[in-house]
Each structure stands twice: as structure tokens, then as C-alpha cells.
Image (cartoon, rainbow, N blue to C red):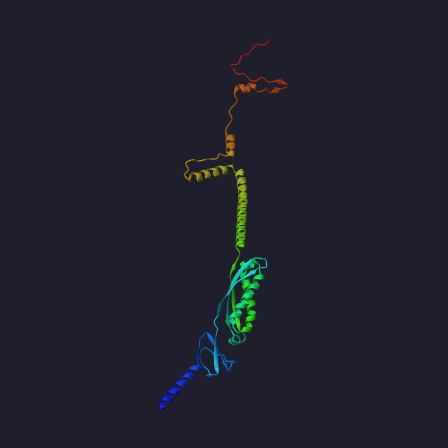
Length: 286
């Protein structure tokens, strides 16, 4: 009989001890509810001793929670239909407030994030959604963090992941980007032609002052063409070089027939006889 009583006492003591001991993990905080009222003291990580049949512990995760926001359809300020999805990073900073003031803080944060995302879509232009996401992320974070502070939640950051556009808008933007690249290419080509024309004008002025520079340029062109091992060599012959050679070549004397046909110069109103050669015949005068 004594052994049975001792065994019953040990079993009852073990059951009481098991019901009064809880383990709180490092990333958790324990809230103790005694007869339905929350205790102000939060149980830190480790072994927590409770009052059997009176205390109930609720563990709150203090880690950063990553919550994806479902894609939301909206119309931007410039009347473009888009589909935007995002992700929210938040954590609990006050476990008592998070457990008492809101029924399910995860669901509450998710609903606020969805409505805030639709609101930010309607207030923004398409260019802002595509190129100015940092400012939109800051505005979205502020919109979600304002009500979350009353729930003991801190919004760490909000990131817009993707912006889905209609196919017609994608084709229009692609044509616009192609036209812009074509415009830049034409402007760059025209600028290059303008600079080349200025350089050619300077080179022409220099060659006009120094005719030998044209010959050197001609020889350099011949060297460049001959280095390509072509079977046919086309050599341009400048007109200026022909004029230079023509000016340096002495002209031959005209034939006697041309000299006889030339008019005689007059001296004091009388024609000057042309000189006769030794073989010319002299006819007697009447």
C-alpha cells in the first residue's frame, strides 16, 4: 500500500511539473495569460515555469517575416492597366500588443499591403513604376507602417518585384525604343560627317598652300592600296599635277607657215617687212 501511494505521488508530481514547465526558443517570446489576463512580464528564451491549471503561455515569433503580396491589377495615373506584385519584410517589436490588439497580425499586414499597393498604383505614372521604384518603395513602406505600429509590428522594407504590362503596350514601347535608338544613330552619323567635313576642308586648304603635299598624299594612297595585294591598281591622277607639269614643260617654236601668216607689226604707219631667209626669191618691181 505504501509503495502504491508513493508511486501515485511521484506520478502526480511529474504530471504537475510537466504541465508547469515550457521551453521558449531563442527567436521567440512567451506571453503568460493567468486566468485570461496577460502578464506584463514577457518570458525570455529558456525554461519558463508556469502555475499549473492557471497559466497559459502563447509564443510569439520575433523573426523577420517575408510575406509576398499577391499581384494587384490597377490603372495608373496615365490610364495604363498594369499588374504589380511586391514583397513585405516585417517583424514583431512588441509581442504583447501584437497578441492582444490584433487577432491575426500576419493577415492584417497582408490586407493593408494589398490595399496600399493598389493605392500606390493609382497615384503613380507608368514611367515611375518602371524607373523610379525606390521612391515608390519608400512611399509604400510608409503607408503600411503607419497602421502596423498600433499592432506592435515594424515594417522593415517593401520591394516591388514585377510590373506586368499588356502586350500592346510592350509592342508600343519596343517601337518607341527602336525609333529612339535610330534617331541617336542618325545624329551621331551626321555629327561624324560634319566633323569629317571640317577636317577635309582644313586638309584641302593646307594642300592648296603646299602643292607637294598632294603628291605625298598620292604616294601614300598608292602604298595603302598596294599593301592589300590587289591584281588591279587604280591610280587617280590629279588635275593639279597635270597643270604643274604643263607649266614646267617648255613650249616649241611655231612653224614658218604660222609665222608668215602672223600679221606684221607697223612702224610709223608702215608695215615692217618680215626677215627673209637666204633661199627666198626677190622679184623685180615694175
